[in-house]
Image 1 (tube, rainbow, N blue to C red):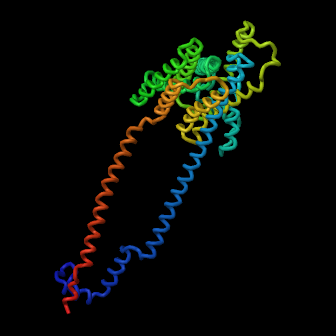
Image 2 (image 1 turned 90 degrees about the vertical axis):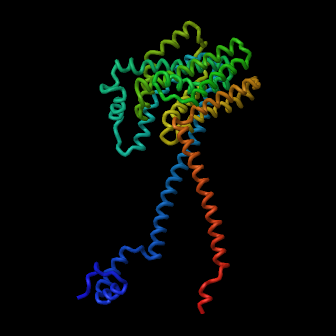
Image 3 (image 1 turned 120 degrees about the horizontal axis):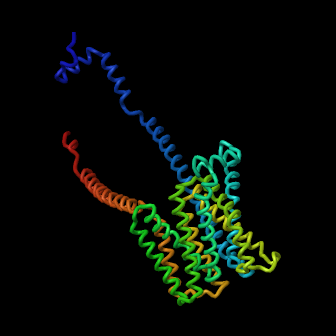
Length: 427
């Protein structure tokens, strides 16, 4: 009998035991082969497959991000061109048709197309097709458990219809008083007003950078007023634009307060409901303005229907991109389209009107634009910035020891090469 394996103490005993028990040698060798790493060829193949999967994942992610970016560029150009185009076309329309409220009423009626256009997109994109009635009922849940009743219509839809009309009317009326560049840049202040109202009403997070942006917006408004020397027409026009931006901010804050967030179908239905409110309850106002000759035109033949329809289509396109562009790109890129409309309007005004771009006006435009861009920063921008700076510091610290390690290892290898080998003295 050989000694038990656990009682072996010396290497000689271990060798003797293994010679007497060859089965144990084979078994231990099999176990070692199972636990040992794979051959180099298998490891190389597995590494190639793993790196291939990683490359494919990275490629898919990069392609997706690239597509989203290109869609974002297309949406930015669409927002910029539709917003600046509608502003310029409204200015051109007023030379032949001096009726801003009637133009507002006419353009708002086109909002009825929101839900039909959304349903067409739903039919092409969604896997589960629903009838228009089913889709309408599902979207009506946004208004409550009972759907869109008359009570809900007057409580949750009518106030927003009034704010929508006031926003567009004040904006169009301001275009009659001042140039389109000032109107477009002053309307960018609505984002600062949204932050202030959200901070006061909705108790949103306080952000110092957004307070700075709001101060810049207010300073830009004052400088824009000073640019024309506080003339009556310019002061009235600036007040109208600021009122329009305020109504727009109030609309957004009240929507979040009373209705919360809406999905694409719910938002489309809500905007179509606003057009119904416009037809039922706002139609009387253009009629009254016509008979009181506040907004009067001699005959329907002189109405520039092409300009009216063109303005309505551009405004509808702008609102579609603003509300549904989030589905294909980043919200920040959409907001950039509004800022880019300012230089577009400035170029058009430079060649079509007698606008004077003095230093005060240019500084005011830059200040308001800077404030708008600061408001686009996300809420956690400071945390992300600190993380980025921390990562950069860690990378610098890691690179320095690695560089020193390379130098030391190089010196050591050089010393080994120069040092004589002990094997040469054994013979």
